[in-house]
Image (cartoon, rainbow, N blue to C red; front, side, top):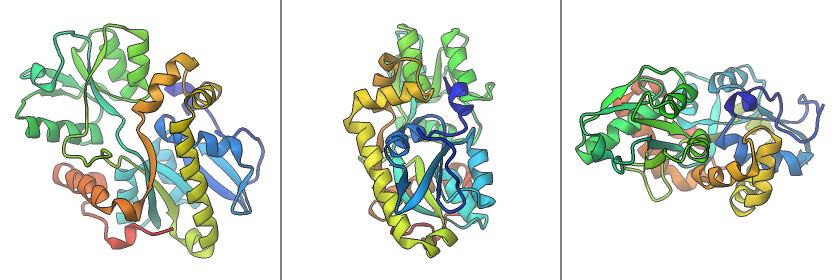
Length: 307
């Protein structure tokens, strides 16, 4: 499913819209693409400008497109947004739309909580990644010692290892988490990775805008933020329509598989100025465990802007 989504050149329901004088909006396969489905399929333009919503293959593709000025807006991991800002790429945080998509899962019915994995292995993708940091923070909070298994190089490989019973437990990101449960009744959720998070969860995704573009088009920035907020709200309030769009755009195989995935994405676009403590808490945690992931320091106050 993820490979199909990654192959999509454009999420939009319309084709062939030029990006030069319009709004170029980048998302990633998975929850961020789900958050923008209603934006892409309901609006030909936003703020009086043609709108193009592009699905990029990976966070690195989004990073490169922002750095080259090929995107005006993007939804990408908050960690990467902070890293880009600290490295001099003029991207500014406008809103946080995704609040936790990582889950500890197990194929062993005896595992119902993290403590049941004491001394055992827990597979995840990416040493120093968000999943790795949140697992280590959770183990510290719960006083549980697990052996973290870094053998697998992608989230899809981790999910496949759990499906094939090569590992007893793993950290899997949505939408693969719901896919696993739909396909295999022996796999269940054990814990959402939200240790130490606020009421909403962790601000794992960021809506950003290129600073120079925002300076030239402040009215358009406000219009895009509002249109995107409505899209996120529709993803939450219109489950059947959202499930249908997920299937149409290769984000789920069937509507039945898409329906349980939608709530696990935890989509809610909250303006960054309103969730400053949550953003700081999340980036502080990343800095403590993996400072290089956010560029070696916490971003200064210029990182967050009010649309």
